Image 1 (tube, protein in one colour):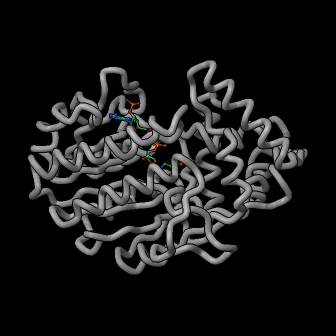
Image 2: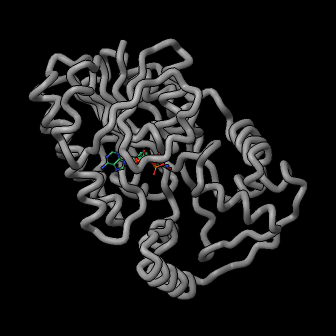
Image 3: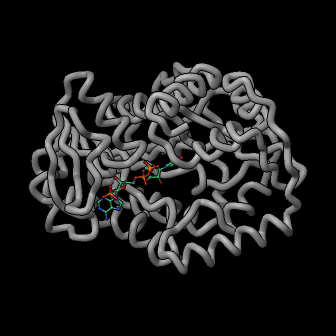
Length: 326
Ligand SMILES: NC(=O)c1ccc[n+]([C@@H]2O[C@H](COP(=O)([O-])OP(=O)(O)OC[C@H]3O[C@@H](n4cnc5c(N)ncnc54)[C@H](OP(=O)(O)O)[C@@H]3O)[C@@H](O)[C@H]2O)c1
């Protein structure tokens, strides 16, 4: 089977390309002339040069696909416009090309985000029927990308997945926490101990493959995460033990965190490089509970992650150390 993957040069997409190739599937990766291909090196994968913002360039790759895994997205941006173009317009473009060129496709899997659904009300997991209340421009753009994708469910089999925080080798975001622990500090924003759903990129890649192949996934939206949420302090504890470090927890009151977020935004604007830390991110942290139910994906598709948090963090740490990131 031929899998056409968008976002394969990124963190999540490269895991999916790798796991599909390991299974012996035919993999075609959408890449841009500017893409860095380092995470695809050595993989038996074909490259299709094009951009989601230039739909003409997608046609040939889409025509030859049995499955389309639309993983590409913009997770950091300097403006609302960039989020909407990278997440909504890009999604609409590829869906239009599939509709016109290959509506007989076996499945289109659209990768959304827990950010589209917003936080949970307390520790109770949020399920797929709960109303969405995204807190950030990123979340709102991902929600609109979902709404766009749903409009195409009548034309071909389509599934939407909402991963939570994803960690694992090659990730540069949760990596910041690893770096802090290694330096012996834990920056704790506000007084909450956030409780979050989380998943390792290996398990997410497996889940994306299951969602592509499973007939019961069509027309459905699923959260995809570890079965057990974790308190952020648990992640810190595990990392402390793995690194034989004792961290000093530095509490940062919200007003100070917002000011730091504003300063980071200014720095990002001046340098032209968006960062993960900004005022909207602080608002997400402040929400405290980001717990998604993994019941539906287990019931419908029989999917459960394989890596425990402990195992996943250990393997990730080893990778960072081997690759001299830490
Ligand atoms: N990482 C997480 O914790 C997380 C959590 C929930 C959901 N997600 C979702 O998972 C997906 C992947 O996230 P990630 O962390 O892997 O992001 P990433 O590492 O930043 O990768 C983004 C990918 O999208 C591609 N892309 C962006 N705009 C494109 C365009 N116009 N045309 C073609 N390709 C384009 C990038 O290509 P280039 O290499 O050319 O830039 C890159 O391959 C996103 O949809 C994100 O919303 C991620």
